[in-house]
Length: 207
Ligand SMILES: [Zn+2]
Image (cartoon, protein in one colour):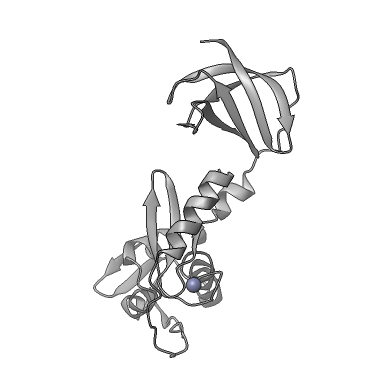
C-alpha cells in the first residue's frame, strides 16, 4: 500500500514532527538472565528488558511464545516457559524482536513506539520521526507465490479505499488497482484494463 499519496502523507508527518532531544546513551539491551527450574525455563529479568525497550510485556511474551513454540506466562517480573528452552534460542528471539519491532531502521535508536493504523502496525521513531511498517516475518514464510496481473484478466478484489479522483483502490499482491466507480468496502470482480508497473486500472464486471 505504498502509493505516492501515502508516501507524501508520511513525509508530511515526518517533517512536522519535532525532533526530540535524546540522550546520547547508547542503547544496551539487557541480556536475558535465564535459569532452569524443574522442567521450566525462567527469564529472571523480563520486566527489565521490556522496560528498556519500552514495550508491553505481553507483546514480547506473545512473540516469544509464538517463536519458541512453547507455553508460558508472566509471574511477577519474570517469565516462566514450559520445558527447557535453550538460552540461545531465547536470546535470539528477543534480539529478533528488538531488531524488527523496536530499533528504528533510519537512525538505529530504540526510542520508538508502535502506532496502529487500522490493521497495520507502524513503528514511529521519537528520535528522528521516521515511520515504517512492521515487517511480519510470519507472513513471509507462508507467502503465496507472487501473483501477476495481466491486462484483460478478471480478479476479485476488495475496495479498500477511494482515491482522490473517486476511483476505488484495491490491492492485489504487489499491485495497487484503481477501479472506476467502485464503493469502499465492496467486494467486486474487476477486469484489468491497463497495467503500468505495479499500478493497474480496471472496471467492475459484476457486483
Ligand atoms: Zn529514528
